[in-house]
Image (tube, rainbow, N blue to C red; front, side, top):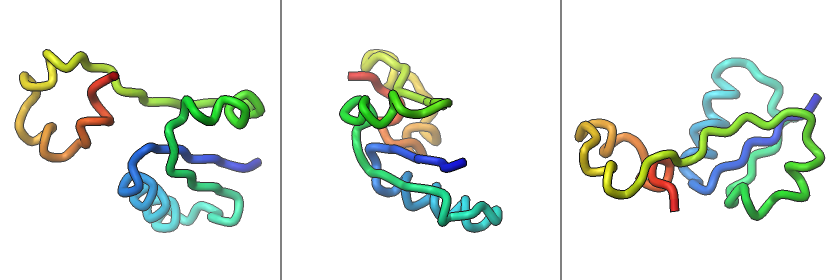
Length: 81
């Protein structure tokens, strides 16, 4: 089995790769791609399982989040377009 990890944010890709290595996962069976997932529908349609955590907040709700959440998470990870 092969894992494909897609994120629009390069820092998130780097952290995912670091966490995978730290936890002893086989990096040779993983592919890390920095791209908008919606631009990769051909690849996604070939997958047997897709796990996603897309942006889920409206812009008007973003400012009501705790400061530490806004500081830690990229806005693009939280606010949908």
